[in-house]
Image 1 (spheres, rainbow, N blue to C red):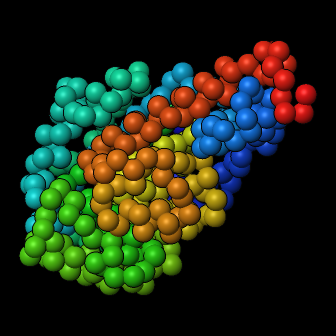
Image 2 (image 1 turned 120 degrees about the vertical axis):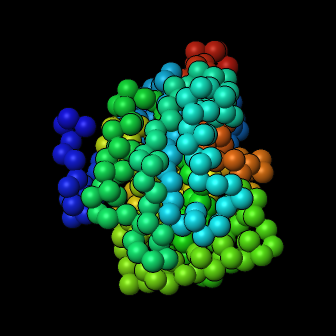
Amino acid sequence: MSDIAKPQTLADLRRLLATLPGPGAEAAAAAAQREPQLTKPAGSLGRLEDLAAWTATWQDRHPPTMARIGVRVFAGNHGVAARGVSAFPPEVTVQMVANFQAGGAAVNQLSKAIGADMRAVALDLDTPTADFTQAPAMVETAFLQAVTTGMENVEADLDLVCLGEMGIGNTTSAAAVCLALFGGTATDWTGPGTGVSGDALDAKTRVVAEGAAFHAEAAGDGLEILRRLGGRELAAIAGAVIGARLKRVPVMLDGFICTAAAAPLALAVPGLLDHCQVAHASAEPGHRRLIDALGKAPLLDLGLRLGEASGAVTAASLVRSAVACHTGMATFAEAGVSDKDG
């Protein structure tokens, strides 16, 4: 970020969001011109055609490339976990980061399968955020530091970045963010997360309701909601989305928590998530509601609810396939095949 000023205040961040680059019009036009010339019936590759055009548009180049895929998994600890909202203790966050770094997690295997560069980024795991039912989760400086960390972990030479998270208690945080942003009831947004049910799920739902109610005064401000109800890893995901837009890197969002982390940006600036795809519809029940609220269509529906960018990496293969077809297929003229008009 040497050429980008780090936001020192929320006002700085708002100004940055207002100046982010838009779609690459020339690249989009070139993709649109090439697609009908390829040796297939128009539209026959469905969403793969859309993905190829989307990739070119947000890389701002044609032909698009998909040689280097980055996977960034951000980890943070939540003070609200002390309320018993997870089936696992907060220590698991630290243990899972060690597992990521040792190459033993699901996302490591998925990343290897597609040759992606996977990195786990831990954010002050020894200092959990505040219990958001009693105070804002993060003070402004901590929030901005996490956002900046996310921005810095997306390199300009990536062709696609897959974002994910790890943090015990973060489905509670994500549900509270969604409730504050989009309304409804806490029940609409709160799911089992790591596997809570019965009385434990009821208690988790009450915590989500308490948090959103405590910070109701900020309900119309996406960034403030993320600061007050999010976690460091959610803030870093939002920062990575911003950094990717600045550096012309398309983004693959993972499941419920990752999408919830990005959602405040869509409220801050319309169209700010246009360079993002939602990888899959999570089994976490609030995710479909959130996807609908954002007007996004998930690429996959596999019953996943692991997090850690597992769905995002799986969906990245679709983008690579889309780009391969768009760039590698022969045109009707090159193949000597008559098109419908010839």
